[in-house]
Length: 378
Image (tube, rainbow, N blue to C red):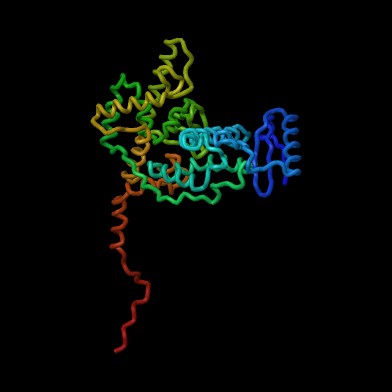
């Protein structure tokens, strides 16, 4: 038997009463008046001692999943801002529509199993489901520590789903040429430098948005990819490492001309020269929606299927690999954390590239230095 008074979360000034009686637990939120909370706890403990307080009959309101989630997110954590944003977005888009108003103690393991089954049936892959599970697990762990629930229903919960085959539909080399030809004339070629950069470097759209002139070494024909733009803020790259991406001679000259044009436009408008390589008409940085609209217009004019921003990254990789370029270098230029990722995504684009090496097997000759097989005795 016990009645405890605790501040949850610590430092918030909000006081809760936690009751543990005959193996059953209840929690009650009192408010920000510690004196009132202390008096309430004393009265409940006295009634428990006299046997006048039935924990089964008392209606103690448990916090909802949404209330626990808000408290958990508001507490100090050793997270990056991008991690906090990811948790908040996944909770808002996937979890809260289902569990927002449900008391935290009424969400059972079978409910979570049904939730993830539904999400998988809707087409989400295992990787996305893991991203959704992470903040749910955090909320339930917080609820356990706050003594709202006995145990975490996600404990030892595994997502036993088959990984869906990752399919990409990149542009071929001739299709890429058609797209670039249309980009040269669309809006006077305003989007040609950025589309060319995507096709010739394989950089992610967030990395292209965050690219600054200081990141470009025209003499070495290199771009240092240091940061990305995600969730309306600059952050580091996806694998948290910088890398050097090589530029082709044509891309180098195109970006030099783009820099000159950008300086002239800033001077004419009486505005300072932007530190970002690609800017929008109204924004300091390239607007992703405007960029995609430009791709849509150019691909339609070229008679191509829909081309997404990420499709150009895949096109860069597959064109290089089908030309027989070193997969290790392609992997590095793409910024993959390991070459295994590159193999997993693009391995099926390699068949037939190494037939000449396989053909060498027919050229094997016996080693004259080795002993000849002994003749059997007659």
